[in-house]
Image 1 (cartoon, rainbow, N blue to C red):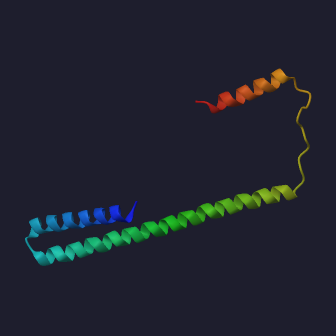
Image 2: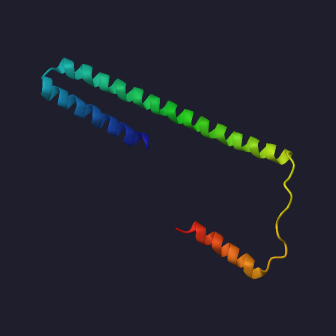
Image 3: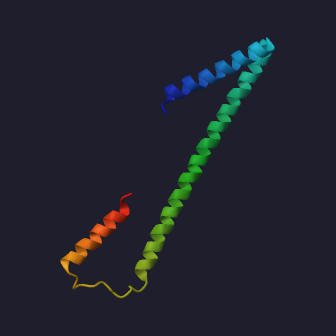
Length: 106
């Protein structure tokens, strides 16, 4: 979201809050206090969402590092014996590819 849109939405929310409070209480001082409180709550929510996004990206990068580490550990270990059949007929290989593709389709 661009800054321009964000500022418009925040201004719209604060103006609506001010109008609703004014029509409910008919007091300018109450309008000022509640609008400032609403602004503070919006800023706290924004700050919390930024912290959450930073935390989530950190978790994603740690998961990626674990996967890399697991892959490197797997490379160090012994390789399993090669059990691949090398004398398959071309029809059998084509059937296996078709079956694999059909499993991927809904």
